[in-house]
Amino acid sequence: MKRQAIIGSVWALGGYGASQVLRLGGNLLLAYLLFPKAFGLMGLVAIVMQGLEMFSDVGIGPSIVQNKRGDEPAFLNTAWTIQVIRGFALWICACILAWPASRFYGESDLFLLLLVASFSAVIRGLGSTSIASLNRAIKLREISLLDLVAQACALLVTAVWALTYPTVWALVGGQLAAALVKSIASHTVLRHNRDRFAWDRTAAQELFHFGKWIFISTIVTFIALHSDRLILGKLLTIEDFGLYTIALVLSRTAMIVASRIANTVLFPILTRHQDDPKQLMSIFIRARAVMLWASIGVCGAIVVLAPTFFTLFYKPEYAGSGLIAQWLVLFMWTTILLTGMDRVPLAMGKSRVMFQANIIRALGAGIAVGGYLVGEYLERQYLWTEAGLPGFIIGLSLGVVIAYIYLQFKLPHGRTKVFLQSTRYSFGLALFTGAGLTVLHLLRVRISSDTAHIVAFLLAGGICAIVLFRIVHTLFPNMKKGLLNSTTPFQEHGR
Image 1 (cartoon, rainbow, N blue to C red):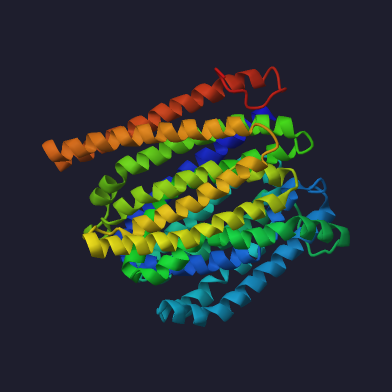
Image 2 (cartoon, one colour):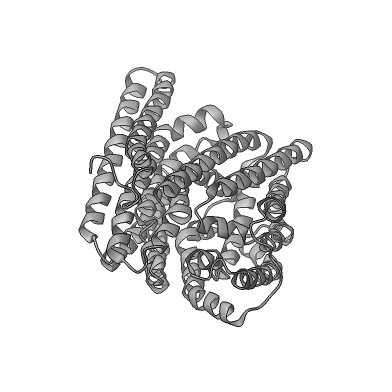
C-alpha cells in the first residue's frame, strides 16, 4: 500500500505537472490568437456545463472506488449503464437551458455555443468504467497518460482552429476533441473492463444509496465552488469576466494539485481503513502533510510571480489578471485546507457529513456578494481601486473557513493535530509570500521594474525548490522503508 501510495502520488503530481505545462503553453498561444471576450464566453459555457454535471452527479466513480463490489462485472456494467443515461440526459437539459442562459447573461452567442459544447456530456458518458477501476487500484499511470494525450489533442485542435478561424468556436472544438479521445481510448487502450448495458437491481440500489447524498451534496458543492463565475458572469463585463477566467486557470493550480492527490491517492487508501477510524486518521494526517507542502509551493509561487507573468507573457489587455490571480490564492488556500478532510467521512460511508459541510460552504456565495457590495461602496466613497472583486473573493474564503470549522468537529480522531497542522502550514505560506512581496515592492520602488521581474522568477523558483526538497526528503525514506515493511503507510521522516 505504501509503494502504491507513493507511486500513485508521483504519477498524480507528475501527470498534473505535465498537464499544466501544456495548459500554460496553450493559454499563452491562445491569448495571442483570441481575445478576452472569447475566454469570457467559454467561461460561461463551462460554468453552465459544470452546473449540469454536478446537479446530476450520483457518485458513480466514488461508488466504484468505495464499494466492496467495485470489481464485480454486474456492478460495473450497471454503473456504466447509469453513466450513459446520465450523459444523454445532461445534453438534453443543456439544450433546454441554452436559450434562458443566453438571455440571462445577455450574450446571444451563448445559445448556439451551449447546444454544441454540451454534446461532450454524451461523449464522456460513453467512457469506460476502466478509469474508475484503475483509480480504485491506485494505478494512476494509465489515467495520467490518457489525460495528457486528450489534453494534447484538444490543444492541437484548438490552436489549428484558432489560426484558421480565430473565434470562441476554437475552444469548443478543442473541448469536444478531448472528450472524444478520452472516451475512445478508455475502451480501446485501457481495456480494464468490458462495459456493456446491463441492470443489476442490487447493484443499482447500492449505487443510488451511496450516491443520494453525493447527488444532493454536489448541487451544493457547485454553488460553493462555482458560484463565483455564476455571479461574476452577471456582475462583470464579458471582457472583465474573461480576465477573471484567465486568472482562475493559474490560481486554481494549487487547489487542483491537492484535489487530485485527495481523490486519486488518498481516498482509495482511506477506504481500506473505513472500519478503523483511528488508523484512518493517522494515515490522513501524514498524507495531508505532503499535500500541504506541495500546495504551499504552488500558492507561494503564484502570489509572487503572477503580475510579472501576465505582464511579460500576455498582451497588455490581459495584465489585470495578475492582481486577480494573487487575490484568488486566498480562496484557493482555504479550499486546500478543506480538501481531503471531506474525504474522511466519505471513506467511512458518511456522505451526509460532506453534504452538510457543503451546505455551510455554499453560504460563502451570499457572503461573497456582500463583500462585493462593500467593495463597491469603498470604491465610490474612498476612491479605492477595484475593491469590489477582492471583497467578493474574501467573502468566498470566509464561507470555506466556516465549513472547515464544521468538518474539524466531525473528524473521528486527531482534531487537535489537524488544526495545528493547518495553522502551521498557513503561517508558513504567509511567511513565504509576505517576504517575497516585500522584496519585490522595495525593488520596484528603489531600483526598476525589470529587476523586480527577474527577482520574482528567482523567488518563485526558490519557494518551489525549498518545498520540493522537503517533499522528497519526506517521501524518499518512506519508499526505502516500504520495500522492507508495509505496516504504517506514509511514515513521515523526522516526525
